[in-house]
Length: 77
Image (cartoon, rainbow, N blue to C red; front, side, top):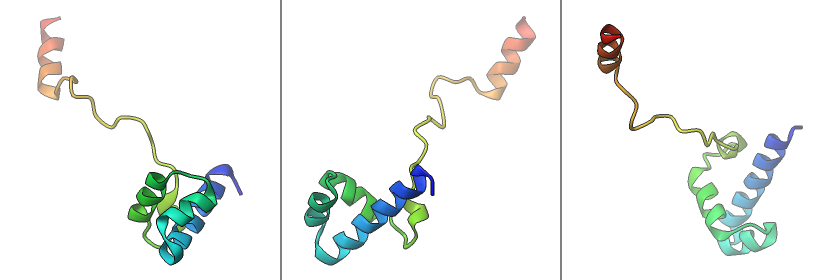
């Protein structure tokens, strides 16, 4: 089992405990912040795959040129 899977399974355990005994109890038991447990509970859909680490890479860039602008720039060169 790799680290990503282990982390997701640990998060699943924290979420299941939070559903039974409360989020603050689960946060203290697993030694994570309360906000992390709240975020995991919101994201949890019944499988540990939903709790796996997500990409931190930006998916868009606000200053990026559109296709039309790029074609105009290429024609002027």
